[in-house]
Image 1 (cartoon, rainbow, N blue to C red):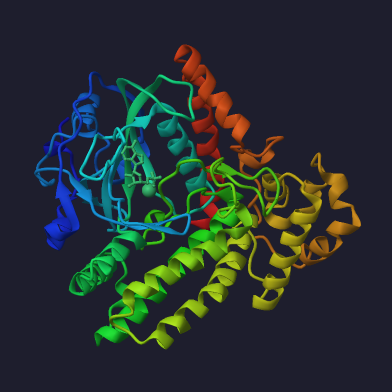
Image 2: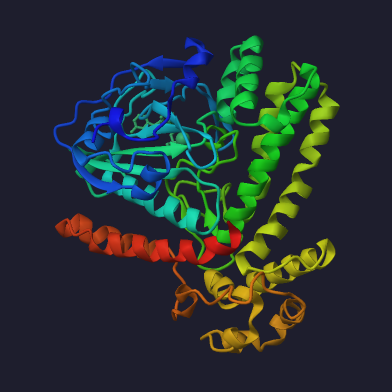
Length: 475
Ligand code: AMP
Ligand code: MG
């Protein structure tokens, strides 16, 4: 069934309203072949594209043929940003574009079909505009895991293998090529604002802020502009803090927290060298090229605040410095509050009051850092704070240690959100579902060696089960 006949699908061209100062119309690459490797049927149904035939899917998400209600041509978005805290005015969509937009049929949110690997643009510099197949597979694994663990993330929507040979320094080359489509709640980045500040286009900053508020952050709608700018910074900060807190509780290290990778909706996106930490090690770092460990696991909250400070600078033309600074000072407390809520979500517990929750979060974090027990195992074992279930874990002896004492005492005060919170079959398995680096490699190897996608499919099914196990309580 083609797009035009899919029931319910609601396309949008909202981003065009901003005008050409924010993007460049570009052409997609002409790939030698298209082989559909991943189709996110769950999200396709959610936006009304569940019945799209595979050949139409390839046509729109591999060839990027426009459809009724889409842009006439894809839009390469303009942005700058700080990479590893060094300003780079030569960024922008160099291997991706905004192909189309639509509305989420469940909650009405505006969603982008953004691409990765769809060809060169004016922002490609020396790059080929392509994505390796391994890079695409890794992005799917990251987004599926994060979504299951309750992180506000972009969704990998489509992955198509494109039949080219790519040369990369960090992968055995030549390596296979792919094009990814992600569904994102905006692609407006902190770096989109920084570019306009750099160019002294203050009116355009205002226009982008008002567009962002109207389409994504209605809670910041205020008059006059001074109050609006302050409310905007606060709204973005709350969302970024909430996402950052949930990364920490997923044991997730994004790896490249440059300002161009921070979405103003707070949605987590753009997954390159990400990793999940096997244990709570604050110095655990994802990217091999991050030699100073700037984006290490434990530094993520500070780095996000540093990035928010860059956004505040873009708002200085519209609001007094002290008011913006005041908002930035609220970032730490907002992060802590979000962290305390997220830890209860992970454990499926009712709040025990703000003060006790704070003590519980502190005690758990200290215990995990000191014991270095497997990170995900702790949350799996203590779902619903059922001491009886935890006592059956292979880690039970750790839970009898004095180091665990304070955590155990606090957990005993807590009530599960529902009596059956840990009854889902997922919690009856012997192991939690994880995505450590050796697992990622062992999923990739059979694909690389013999085009065998079984391990990949099996893992996606396991993640799906985990998602369902957590979703009931946290929806
Ligand atoms: P990222 O690390 O994916 O956030 O990308 C940082 C910048 O490099 C962005 O401007 C990208 O568009 C650009 N870029 C990354 N890889 C490529 C590539 N293969 N070809 C062209 N541009 C790229
Ligand atoms: Mg990026």
